[in-house]
Amino acid sequence: EAGVAQSPRYKIIEKRQSVAFWCNPISGHATLYWYQQILGQGPKLLIQFQNNGVVDDSQLPKDRFSAERLKGVDSTLKIQPAKLEDSAVYLCASSFNGVTQYFGPGTRLLVL
Amino acid sequence: GQQLNQSPQSMFIQEGEDVSMNCTSSSIFNTWLWYKQDPGEGPVLLIALYKAGELTSNGRLTAQFGITRKDSFLNISASIPSDVGIYFCAGLPGGGSQGNLIFGKGTKLSVKP
Image (tube, rainbow over all chains, first blue to last red; front, top):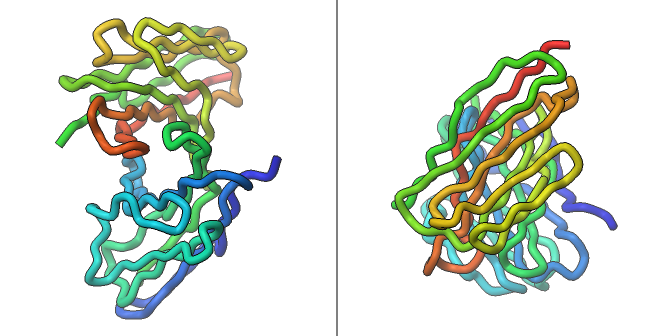
């Protein structure tokens, strides 16, 4: 069974630029999550989707971050404009039961 | 908000030794998950615990869901060099929104051959 796919694996941008990340969850997993992981810390939930609907986006900085899952399968997370403090690993995870989550390899973002 | 206290922060052990790490909270959790993260990779699920008192093994790994539902531990027996990495506990709070896992800060394990 293929795991969660993410791209790109690495991205370097300058502050105030825009960036987008893509995630393809495990086939059949209705729930999809985006996390931000700052160096030395555990992942922090940004947004949770159930099929193509948002379940929880309470910790998403909506002034600069947006995410969509239009067809209920793959998803994109966008940052516009990026700030220095957005440098982190962005992890996508999916779940078949809404509890047990399987993570992708992550996208490492560096904002200069 | 709810927090998980994961300890120890880091461990340096000799190959062959046993390892124990734990997570505690002042709040009740419905599910405990243990993940391992290698450098440059995403967390990989090791063990999932769904009931208070549950004890589950996965090879050399054993994890338990505390009876009080406020803690969990992970043991690794006879450590080997490939056990190196960061281990995270994650819990699903009781009464919280489904899937809103809370993560500990991780335990960094180093193994000397």
